[in-house]
Amino acid sequence: MNQEIVITERKDEYQVVNVNDLKKRSYLVTEIKKEVMKENIHYGLIPGCGKKPTLFKNGAELLCMSFGLSPESSIQINELGEGHREYIVTTTLRNQNGFVVASSAGSCCTKESKYRYRGNELIPTGKPVPRNYWVEKNNSILGAGCVAKKDENGNWMIFKKGDNKKENEDIADVYNTVLKMAVKRSLVASVLLATGGSCEFTQDIEDYTENDNVQINEPQYNDNEMKTNKKPVDRKQGFLDSMKKLAAIDNESFVNLLGAAGYERAEDVPKESYGMVYKQMKEAMDKIKDNF
Image (cartoon, rainbow, N blue to C red; front, side):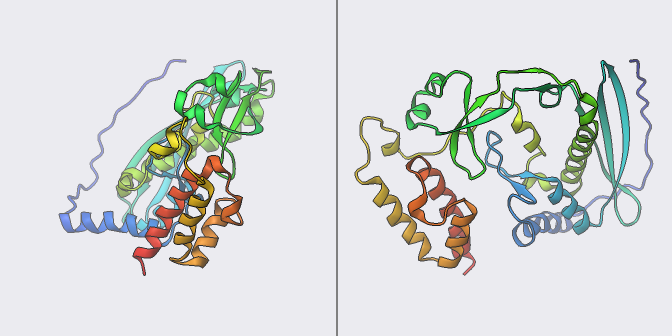
């Protein structure tokens, strides 16, 4: 399909932001994240995508309201044959005076594997990832066609790839989903550009983590935990003692955070998740402690 790209020069009023205003704008993003946004609703850490949180669509919309930005979208549809199509969405953000602040494009296509195929979804096996997998980095430890991935409770589990991969015969059923994904990618990119939000968030990539080739971040363990020949003495008791110290900071917050991680009591945390759970809890409790 032939396309012509026309580049036009805009002559909107150009304003230089002074340093003080720039500092205020950057500080505002940080404060909104801290005081208004909620993790896993407006943003979240995505396996395989580094330590900087990913901005979700809900978070992008909240930043638009906070900065007084109005989004406008234009949609281009490219027919690719055999029922497949690509959506290219360009989102333009205007301030309260009507001037363009930022514009960015995002695309999504029905030929992306999660839309094009069926029968290759990841299936939970219910088995935790063994410790020696992280040491040896040998996929055969997980089993043929298996990968390591966090479940909905944040636990590292073994998932098996579906082996009945076939073309999606009802490709039109995903048109609306693909369009919404293109809109989301475009919106988040524009908001990060307009607000300078990249200081706190990364690009909207949570939708890509469903792909088969995603590289999953491994959990962090200390040196003693990584030695396969020397197991820590009474490791469970050491974990529980450490959790008690965190609970002493603010027991109510501790209980809420532990519940959010999927556990009613510290005793319910499986051994293979000690390192990950403690690290997450400690970081959260340290922030609470700093606010006292």
